[in-house]
Length: 341
Image 1 (spheres, rainbow, N blue to C red):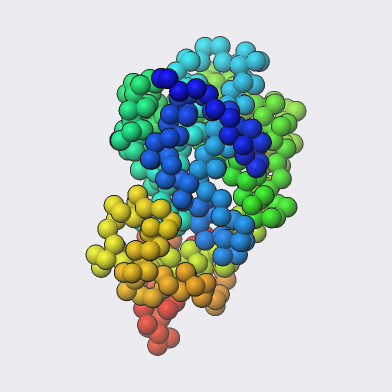
Image 2: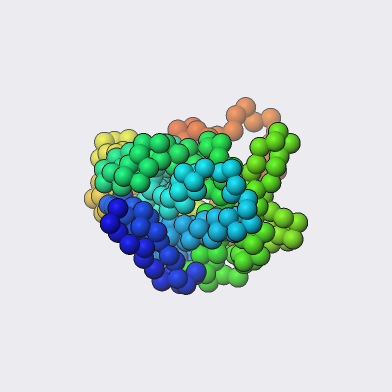
């Protein structure tokens, strides 16, 4: 590989150093697409600064993973870990979101396949596959796929998927910064300095923290709670997300939009097609920020225990329930929406 390492300036982490293999992966169309997929979906309708992209987040996750590997290496924790695992983890951090749909997680909630599964598939396609095979062959592609799908048995897997994954540290910090809220504060330096590979009861090693890092870990967990409560699950964000899901499902269900196009689109290209092929008018309402208002807000703890089934895992059942409620109120289908954040 003839490329050289590069330094990229980032508003959150300052200088991010990219190794030559990461530079090569970054310059493929699969990864460049992430420049045009917003990290927080429709949150910009509430927090105007929340227009940062999955691309920026991928760089941040890569940077933090690289820092963590340096800490583990300096401490001697990487003894016995295959060098190929370190390469795979570093690149998995960069590539973990390549399967993401436009507008964050909304379409997975609407019943589309998981972005992890799509990402694993895209690792073996196009220019990106050629880059990865040049670095480490098909074995590297498989290692990265296992990491981003949460099924790797590497001791380092927890850096990519788990309660302490570095993806989480970046998105909480970055999202808080871009939304202009004080909720995502994490003691990142302390947390990274305390990361270790600890032995579990079964004798295998996994990512953990030294005792001195427990308070920093607690700050991470509390930041996640605060960001979900105040940003990710803000009622207007959820309203826009719910409306968007209904509009896309209707367009795909009537053949006006192709599901494969939806999976590979950017925010802009999907919205353009949706506005041109929206049988409900809901997509345009989202685009113009004419959002549905809350009629009822019920905590899960108050839902009756004798319900025959829980709808949230079945988008078709949710849609039938919505239309039944609308009919009872004398409204058109799609005029009442039910959301399970």
